[in-house]
Length: 229
Image 1 (spheres, helix red, strand yellow):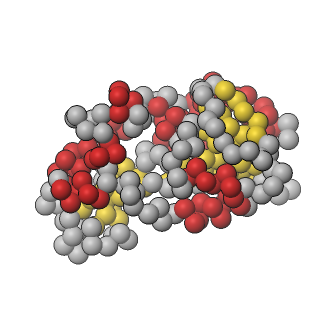
Image 2: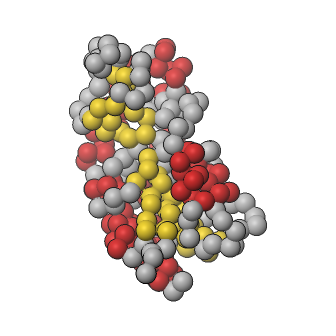
């Protein structure tokens, strides 16, 4: 029997329950700066050390936390579905929970790349410092999609979404584009679910089942609803 294709879009809300602060936490400031002002190409040109320090800090924070019940619950669904996770998160909590098919739309905190060639990518768990160079001599930078940069994997994510038999959104405000636009690529009539402690606004015309709860609490309800399809 062919397994149904389950596609899940996750955002910062699922990782926040592991203790990772989102860009909007604590007044949205880091060292007196709004993260949006740190995580963009202009900031990199102006003060690359500040940008590296910001991501070195975030990398160290990810190392301190563990996957939560929502990450683990999603990984458990892999046996029943042909499952693909599309995440806006740069952490590796889905992978650590056991999920195998994870597409990171906005990059990965434990990878770095050359400023001269975006395809020269290396693993990193420590800090990236000014003067750290790739093989091609280019300064190493976080393998992260910054604000104001294109999202290279959005086309692949849209293709995956268009093939979904079931589409689920967990822990995302649906305000960050182009990721929020993935809903528009779902096939008409397929079951769509949104699990969030505060259900975001979404476009009309799609019949959506909502679960208003933190991801760690709503994951079992989601599993029950999926099993009933």
